[in-house]
Amino acid sequence: MTETVLPASVASVFEEVIRRNPGEGEFHQAVREVLESLGPVVAKHPEYADAEVIRRLCEPERQVIFRVPWTDDAGRVQLNRGFRVEFNSALGPYKGGLRFHPSVYLGIVKFLGFEQIFKNSLTGLPIGGAKGGSDFDPKGRSDAEVMRFCQSFMIELYRHLGEHTDVPAGDIGVGTREIGYLFGQYKRITNRFESGVLTGKGLTWGGSQVRTEATGYGAVFFVDEILRTAGESFEGRRAIVSGSGNVAIYAIEKIHELGGRVVACSDSNGYIVDEAGIDLDLLKDIKDVRRGRISEYAAQRPGAVSVPGGVIWDVPTDIALPCATQNELGENGAAALIRGGCRVVAEGANMPTTPGAVRALRAAGVRFAPGKAVNAGGVATSALEMQQNASRDSWSFEYTEQRLAEIVRSIHDRCLETAESYGAPGDYVAGANIAGFTRVADAMLAQGVV
Ligand code: NDP
Ligand code: 2IT
Image 1 (cartoon, rainbow, N blue to C red):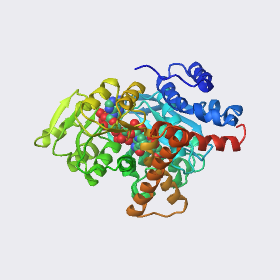
Image 2 (cartoon, rainbow, N blue to C red):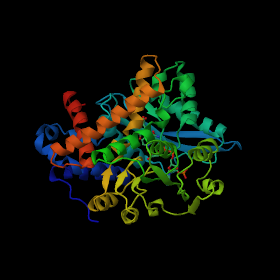
Image 3 (cartoon, rainbow, N blue to C red):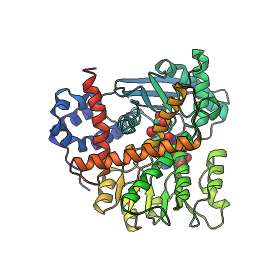
Image 4 (spheres, rainbow, N blue to C red):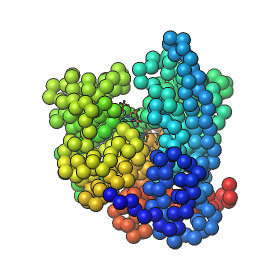
């Protein structure tokens, strides 16, 4: 499918981004996706162009790249590269996850940091945008190796962090175990129990109820609003969820609670189909407890089928939630979803749908909602964790989940209202980009040329 033409008012900014950030394809893709929505905003608000707000937004405030040496269980020295891109602090301290995956390089961290600015803005909470991580691969590593890696990573990272400066959390390959090792090392280096310096902590040492579940639950609350807007609900609907990590597991859990049935999920080796609906206890045991592969699910569940190397989008469904990784849903996948009767695609992951696939889905009348709106419940609950840490308080599960649900509903409504006011009714992409952008842009204008 042909590329959308960029509005002339932002085309030169995009050319500059390509020129100044060579070889960072994912970053270019994320910037372009936002700029495509901004033509009408710049036309209405010349003050943004006058102050070069968009150009400044596309340049991270600070980028840190560092060496992470560590020793494996056999006593061999291993080497990885660490990153933290502190993208924008107009709305609050830098906030965003850490990703440990062999594919991580500067272009991935920058795309994620850039997305995070608008996502965090959409939450309405006081958080700036950042992302970090490493090309370290935790798969197959012992707990002791993961701990030594995390300790070495924090020996450099700690000097850039602080509850009012930069507050990381988890992402792919970084869960409560890794946050624990990182927090322990931060505390040891600084001699401060500074809870607010990381989110996604364990419940007994400063973590928040619902943070583990928040991204998946929030994504499903968002889809529930999409359905509700059309007078529909999850009741009796089929859904497929790609991935089988943190976001996928809790998306599946909430879809089942709301009366839907998730019939397939995946990992990087293939997918499984379970027409009876995914058995969550089994899934959690395999992925969370044993850190195993999704194919083991079919081996242990009568009636379930494993499709090694297969593409999950071939499974017929009403609703699809890509919850694994960037660009996992391309044009072939979109065509398969359309053939299979899919009516709603909502991104639990960050930028999982390629631009061509987004165009194909929308052209076929599939309702499409972008990750920066759909998965914002995760970081929003991180901000609630920061709020609890700052007041040395801890809230109940029910209260925290209710706060999460309210935030997600308000993001959904703001996307639709903004899209409507810019002449694009029902367009969640335009709504999310414009609403996310204007809040940051106004703060940047107010704070002067910094
Ligand atoms: P996890 O590490 O818990 O799970 C990641 C899942 O995605 C695994 O099933 C993994 O399979 C699969 N996956 C990862 N990389 C690839 C790849 N290159 N190709 C195919 N499959 C892959 O991560 P999360 O669930 O936390 O994150 C999933 C997505 O959600 C990411 O895009 C992340 O940025 C986004 N997100 C996460 C938030 C959070 O709070 N955790 C918040 C908002 C967004 P395998 O085990 O085989 O690698
Ligand atoms: O992509 C994301 O929003 C996250 N990985 C969560 C970030 C956070 O700070 O909770």
